[in-house]
Image (tube, rainbow, N blue to C red):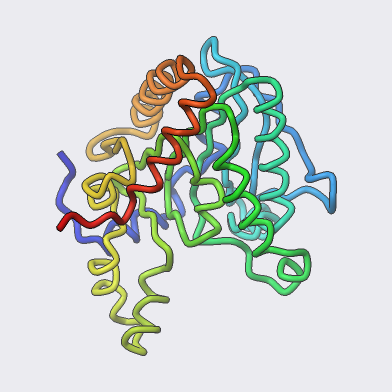
Length: 264
């Protein structure tokens, strides 16, 4: 059972500087990991760590958002906010995974896509939109795990999946609570009210059927959390790998079609 915290307390927990991001889970879950670089169009983006390896005996492609540890590393990675070449790198490796029939695991943890003018010049919005479109048709299983703050389209660009998993203190939202409060009430100090209204916690999204699994964090080390997460991912992959490509795509399509459906 999830420990009782306010939604905004969970937002603050998701943003904690001590909270592990994608690189942590890749290093501890994926054997023989080989990082691959570049989008073959512009360059490489350190905010997206991606490559191939093994989840025990299962060959996988892994893509994770990473903010870095030191201040120098974080500046280089735009504090975990991917640039267009990061999303294009991710899509390049997803297409490669489809070619070689490897399932895909994505780790999401970012306040949103990098919003610098240089990113806009290189097509930030187009890169995100292309990922959304292409991921709907990728013919191998995709599992996306929100490990921290999953913000806006920058997070959704790795979130089109067959199975969505959230850690207990992660959040997933179209906008930050501060941004929402500034728009609705012209007062960013009302972020706690916005967090409540947005329904962005793992518990909320599980109840809505948007995510399939929530991994408990209370009273557990990150090593223990990682172990539980690995087990859930492996069990789900073994199930999804039994589906034909057609059945897999139908399942993914239906998963997203039912989101937001209101029963009368």
